[in-house]
Length: 554
Image (cartoon, rainbow, N blue to C red; front, side, top):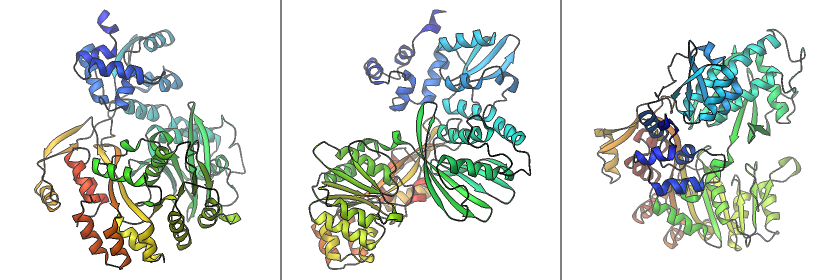
């Protein structure tokens, strides 16, 4: 029927989800190999759920949630794994000469024809969310086969010395490690943890800031897995008493992936953590980092200054690196000389000179920073201010006409001033050099596909009214296949931007208590972390529970 050959853009315009102008603009801007639906979802013009609903209604194709769907394993075996993975589909049921296939894009008729020719079955289509399909593929195609293969390859009781085939591309151990990494990337994990326990090895993924156990592996696989990861990262496989750090650069599905590896000797063997460095999500435009209008205006003004120190503060995993790199990206022009010293260099940026700290040869933050200042820099980025020496050199660099960007570990923006003076930097130097401090945290976003509106509870109204904000309704996710039944999908930052003005400088020089600084900042219109978070709850982007998890309610 001709209706089935309608183009996706026309269907979306007909259903009123996007305008003709937006369609033409998206078609012009999308990547050559990118599908229109993916481009619209990526830009936030519509959600995957809305796209699925349009296709379901307009084409009469059923939508299936694979989260609890009974998938026929015999049907899965009909379609090769590579074909299924490449085209985001999974066969779910066989009925006579018909094969029901769940697809992310049921309008790709070339794939449907390919499937019909290669399998010999009549293909019936169903729509499923991309993440839903990936999870099902991982469950039915991926790691379980490799574990079985691995167990046959390395029977219980064998050791690493029995068979050291941990470098051949086709060996089960290599396949297993690749699949665990690939699965982590597909699920948008930020870290993969290999936790050795007394009787097993637990693999956990940190997704949207929360750890979840992915699978448990037999204990006797531990040494081989550890050795394989160490070989990939060029670490010493015979050293298991000292922590080691390394990097892995691999290509998965023609996509370059950068991983940072850390090993730590624990009582049941070495714990390994792989940090997945996703350059695509880091080099965001500053406008896309979640700053509210006033904070963005203040921060943009700070980074335009020719000198001074701007500090970004927050715990590990609060997105400080993303903010730093996005800032450097904005400041990176041909006319300026930008030099960074980092430990380690997480992302390589074109046009910026980056130095890696190497304590073994005496290249520390402090000594590196001294040398940088002889290189005629305009902007200097120090990965982290950890000690008095680094803090003092950074302060002096800012006083001699350089813009210095760095990070420091404190709970909030005002606590940073006390931290610098605790480090031994004289208050008059802190006052003269510090331009501003940005404190930030990451909170999980309410899943757009299953969010529902509820009346705010009395406790929520009380929390909001204490901060001078009124609230009637809030959004929460009920849980769906897209968000793995958590109600949250993705993360956004909440910020606190403290601009150091003349009055704050006087307070610092006179060693006034923190409470006075806080009172002045509040009167001056500083938006604290808790306030920025609650404003984002009011906009329906996150939940009160998430904000209270990362920010202290006074």
